[in-house]
Length: 181
Image (tube, rainbow, N blue to C red; front, side):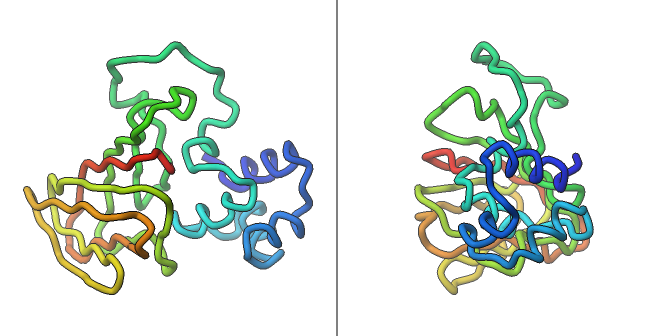
């Protein structure tokens, strides 16, 4: 997906200049410009920070132009929108248009990847179970490495970050409420 073009389109839809979006999001004007030119690929945390200036969730960002659909019960794997990138797949079960009370994600982290240098902070609670590989999760300055079958659950207002420290892909299933993705 062309994140830069999508950001530029959405910013224009809201009638914001790059400077105004940067001010609202608490980032530099250059950051917005580089993203829109696809000269940098923003981390999940960086993109969430930029979208906070709209305000818009990651799910809203990636399904912005999708027509509303009838609420579904079952999904094929190819129907799951990827809210991440090539290195970190955040596959949303459902769509932003469903207006559900919980977000469920299948998360796939390639070896050595993480959610970015900035800690994530948002409303709600989240939890998950590691299916394959190992992931280091840091919540409020406490870190743990979790493997298959291990789980986590925390208040999302606490600063947190995910990092695959292993040599293989890590897969987990997570849920957050309310759905901030």
